[in-house]
Length: 122
Image (cartoon, rainbow, N blue to C red; front, top):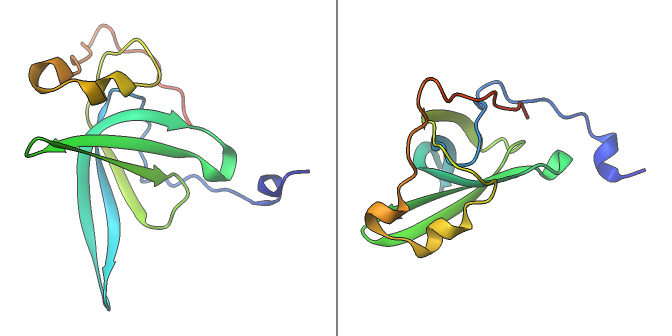
């Protein structure tokens, strides 16, 4: 028996269903001293790792020419909400090739209304 089997995991209803290639807005609680505020991190989802209690997803954004990636845990109390702003059309599950691209080559085309696939729920 694994340790993760003993944990009762509840899905956070504020996390929308998404897949790699989608543009996400992740609302994260940030603690600065005694204050706590919400910070929004917006970028393209590069990967999703489903591993039970340690499931996570990685979001990448480019700010002033510098690429920043953050990995968020699905079951973390720090992740308040995840919104999908764009549905991207990609053909693979891990989008690591976007790290080497800049400018227009790094864009993920938007999925059209007719090409909408069923997004597997987490």
